[in-house]
Image 1 (cartoon, rainbow, N blue to C red):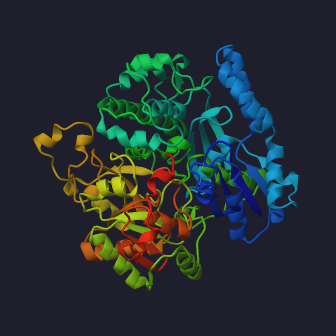
Image 2 (cartoon, rainbow, N blue to C red):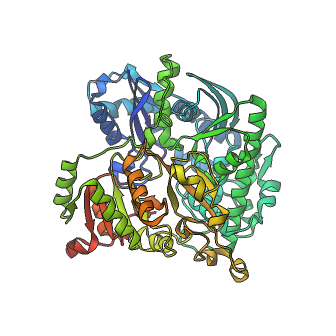
Image 3 (cartoon, rainbow, N blue to C red):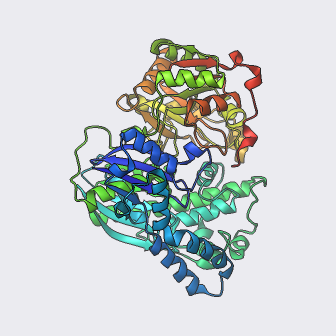
Length: 609
């Protein structure tokens, strides 16, 4: 049985193909269109999934959309009616879009699917529920036979937070919180207030938090969120504008904190860092209270997480360290893109009643390597067509050349195998660096990624070496947990260094791997497993053999405002437009100094953040 799942029309559109319960392919539309967070119909992603599965659209047993548009429209109408005439401006803008497109989404989807293949049968189009899609994406690919499933995001149809129990092939929802009370929207309100883009900049807020102090956490808890001991909560809507207005926060919100919302171009100050630290601390407290109460209530020892809030790897790390669960598994595409996987799996198990297969792998996501790949012949032809000058090496020579470049302090583009699904590059569409190099974090942010200097980088570490370098003894293949660098690997700070504030802390060497050690000694971990990525594992092993260090800096292969690269041409274009100094695409290896000067360009201004 073949089922395609679709998420679209909000942000991060995606498609996934499931065959007999196995996720065969999944990709975000942005990777093909080169428009970051592309919300349009994922036609190219669907076409890729069909090609990967060797099938045509009429061969598909069901196409499943990840939410129910009519229920969402009901929420829109009820919300506006409850506060009328306040919010009429947003209602006037939203209603024509709903009437023209979203309210008739079944017709819209059918039309788009028939553009792919006119023989598509409308009877095969189904609709899931938003939070059910998230829950299914978290539980069914997990390694657990049963688990508590917690979904936290901004908003689906009505639900913003849901708890469910997964048992074999069944999912039973046990608790829900409804709009407008949403942890995701609360965090996004502060993302907006700090001058970052909503549904895009939340990870920036999380990365900024360690530079500040949680001075305003009490203010948030006293005025904005009524947080109960069991983790349930209500938000005081007098401070927000997201339900009926055109901004995330209202005048009372700005008055409460004493400053207006920062403009995207405005200067980041200690105030913004303290605000970031405060909302991060509150979000962690909400998640800790929720997971503690649900663990006690259900007795479950395994936890699955999904929804946009589950991308907060700092909070995930706190929940794991709290010890209420033996194991935690987070869907690597925890946001709306992952809803495509969940919609297809929910239909397979719940609608069609199919049993859940037992898997011997780490999980059912194949390491999240579910996107397009290119044969050696295709890579050579595409790079040649782009004008690249390269050498084609055997595997051993490729690893040696790459390690040589890394040890020399070069930033290396690493393009291998199938593209990752989800927001993280996991060693197939990555930019790599030597974590021992104190200048590497600064170099990658300023000269390669063209992004804010405070942003941290993740360590990719051999799975069996992780506990010797970080205070973490579990799998973390998807960068979904933050853990501390082990104490014996840290460098003690001087009194003068401890007295520094804000981004002045940035350039202090804190550990044996300073390029991946954040200002609070934390690191967002990726454990690398030979079972899911033998080539990246082999490269890390070669780097360890040369240096004694089983860790590499791993960041996504893109620049600020651009999606992660998809094709060899994308990789070469990014390579030639940045200060990346070496590039490996499959077994083709090249250095910047050998390339034609005429092909160099400034990649940074081409994309909006």
